Length: 101
Image 1 (cartoon, one colour):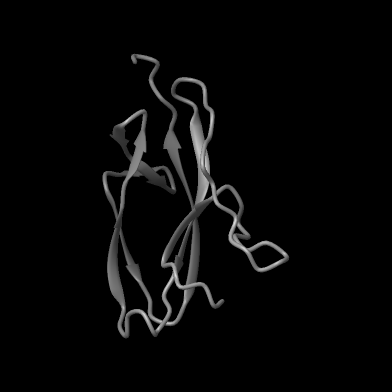
Image 2 (tube, rainbow, N blue to C red):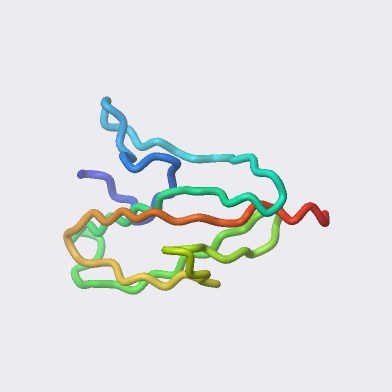
């Protein structure tokens, strides 16, 4: 894809815009306990890292670490294996704030 970053989060399954830019997800709103759906995109450019590499992803809502859900299974944090020379995407979710703040 030509983008050197290795980890992106977006609201869209298709991360790259028509002009080749990356869609950046900055904010989301949710009711207390509501699930926030998003996509995790992993890019593994061979020029950056020559081999498969492990990665850890963490999510924070209102400055508090929250689980990342993959197929309804909670991960705190989420461990993934990035495959060399690939672009991987997957659906995920986090629970909205509890309203206790």
